[in-house]
Length: 254
Image (cartoon, rainbow, N blue to C red; front, side, top):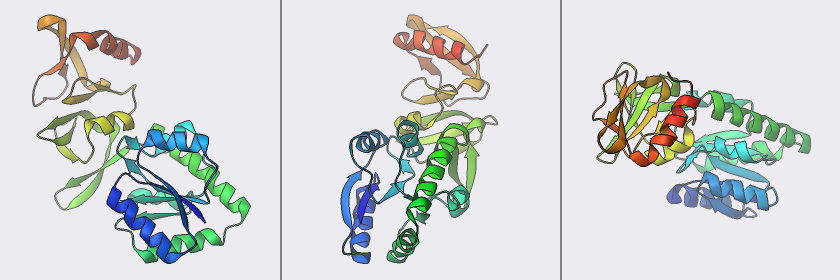
């Protein structure tokens, strides 16, 4: 059985590969990929593997972005560190999903399920995953955030801006509430809808609906004033002003 692993954590990828070989000595790990970009290139230039183990959250964005660019015909087994209730959609669309830390019993169960599928079953699952992933990517982006002793879903539509300081990233909603985010701003830039969010500078990603007005700042720069309070002033550099204005206009913000 030829297996492709898409996972951005080296230790997790190595652990999964070791478990696969333990469960089935005939397993061949044909490649391990850690980004959305490299995954797209791989699928464009290689024959389909027998199964793909795919982490949902990669360093340069969520793995749903892969499906925006290529049609994947292989059965998918998703892996994630997030809570099970957020993955209800995968129950009817993917072969299985595994919650980290992944165990040998988890992998064995998933592979046993895969083995009983007919060729038509596998094709149907693959089609469903492609459709579901595109839908998730375009319309249903949700962040799972830690609030005290719970994990709660935070819709991107409820986020006014993302802010990074001291190597920590936070999302702020329109009420001014702060939520810790596990992704860098670079990774978030690849996850978010470009029409709704803009990377203003190294500290901020702002939602277009949160932009109240704009002040002309020193040196032909712009200062963004949002509908909610921000930890510091949001400055758009002179070089990025034309791009920002085009984004703001195209997005329909008045």
